[in-house]
Amino acid sequence: MKIIIRKVFIFVILAFYYASNCSYNQQTSNGNIKINDKTKIQKAITNNKLKNKKIIRILSLDGGGTRGYIQVKFLEKFCSESGITDLGEYFDLIVGTSIGGITAVLLADSMKPSDLIKFFREKSPWIFTIRSIQDVLSNNASISSKKPNKLQMLYMISTGKPFYQSVSKESNYGDARLRKELQSIFNNRSLTELKTKVLLPAYDFINSKPIVFSNAKLHSIFAIRDVRIVEAAIATSGFPVYFSSSDLYETQCTSIADGGLFQCNPSILAFIAAKELYPSADKYYILSIGTGIKKINMDFDNGETKHVKTSFSIIYNLLPVKYIKIWNVLIQNSKITNDILLNTISNSTDSNVYYYRFDIDLDIHKDCSFDTSTNEFFDYLDEAVELKYKEDNRKIKQFIKELKYNVHIV
Image (cartoon, rainbow, N blue to C red; front, side, top):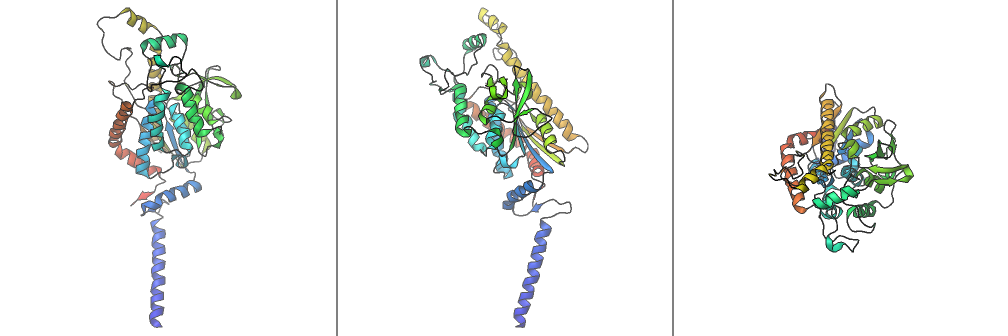
């Protein structure tokens, strides 16, 4: 009997010690969570998200056409390293411009980066293509990734016809294809039905002012909430020259163009919205992802020196085609400006903003225009993201460590 009592006593002591030790392991002096078992991290993060809005996580996605592939490739690696399984569930606010806006609503709807990689590789070649000569009697295109040549570009610009405007709503290419793909995912759901707060900038040509589509209730930023997801996604991605402006009569906005004309890098806009939505937050974590930086040469022969200028090349450089690259310059400068501003804010004394931006330098000798959609191009971006991710690995690991509510892996 004494032996049994002794064993029970020892068992109670050990159980008490184990419980105390677990409790200590999960709380540090400053209240941070400390977990030994990596498999419990995601659960701890979810619980903290539900209980604590003092730490706000923001994902900001630039515009940039098919170069948005850079973002989803980075996010695939980021999720693998961080253990995050649902970016829409994890981030409190996702802000995206143009292709970044499309990616934002897809992520907010729980689509994974790996699925988006497939979307870019399989769908975008049919969005960024035109009909060939043999297709002239058809509504459809028979070849993917067929960009207009210089003569076609000149004709379409002079007549005001966007490069990738389909001849029919039923066409298998161009803007009709983009709408079909988005419609198949979202149907007629409203922006307010997304579980994650999103914000998509655009530009209203009729009233000459920027606008924002968002399911969040904002006062400092005029936001249109009562709109279908498909319409908002198409509106933010209507890049002039490539696509037509959108007509959203139910919002009294009848000519809406790409958000890149307003905020190609929407990180500052994201921060402003987060400050209004969560004014008492102790910390704002901003993950900003670009779509590549490329030195832009205003020569329209890809930087090649021509010793003999033909009459065609002289006319070509005088026509409005030049403005395509001027748009690129303006967009690139806006990206850099917002990056500098947020870096300055996050690096200032006692700042409660923690900011990391991922972007890559594009090869000036490769065709990295916003409408390039070949497999070779995406393979190149795969390699470029891998190299930059390795180069920034220490910064990325530090950001993940900070982002995950001070969850320390021992």
